[in-house]
Amino acid sequence: MGADSRSIRGEIARLNRAVSQFPVQARAVMHVDGAALKKTLQAEAKGVGHAPGLPAAITFESGSGAELFYEAGPVEGGAGSLALLYFGNSKTGARLKDPRFALERQAQETDRKLLALVERLG
Amino acid sequence: MIDVHAHADAFMAALVARGVRVYDSGAGNKPDGSYETPVAPYAVVFTDAGIRSSVSVADGQDERAEFDVDVYSVGTSPRSARSVRSKVLDVVGAELAVAGRVVRVRSVFSDQIKPDRDDPRTALYEGRDGLTVDSLKA
Image (tube, rainbow over all chains, first blue to last red; front, side, top):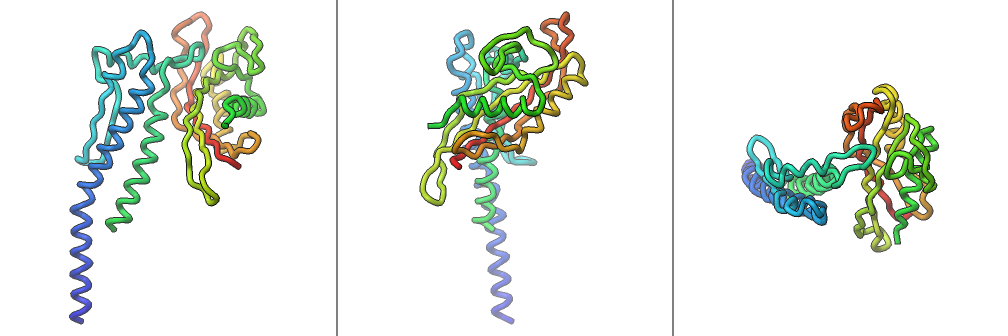
């Protein structure tokens, strides 16, 4: 009986540690992957002759408030308005690759990291 | 060495096999390199050079490639454009024929079908799909 209650207390302590560590480590994952997404979009935006300011206008945010998130893209206004380069049509295609391709790729990587984190802490 | 042309050709051939008139990188450019005045309905395919990465497999390392493809489904009415899109999306999950490779298509995004506002005289409607072609050594 004593051994069982020690075991339960140990399990509760382990779960408490996991619960407290998950947000911290998940926030770090979101920061690293948000920065990686920004870098990818900046690399894709390089080399557009008439939009030299676009790469520098691409920023990112990440966080873990109500939900884990990161987002990256050109800031509004200034060079950010050159986000129009992402739009295209059947005649010309888009000048720049659609950012959803990079987001999809990065999100898959984030999924893998978060699952590994849950397995490690759990 | 991963053959970019073989992947692009296999993708367009898969659309042709589904009854889609396909143009390569601009309306009117036929996959064989010739040109014709575009006749709607049709699909216009834009491909990239692919992203390569090394992946671990049972007997060592393998080269993986991912090609991002934009496909515009174009028709003279929304219904016509949707019919093209339906055939285009039929390749999602399908295996493409590229020698020595296992090649599959997945959908990344799908935009609404809208009128072509650049040239109202043409009265065309179009919708874009973003697809990724995954390629691994067979």
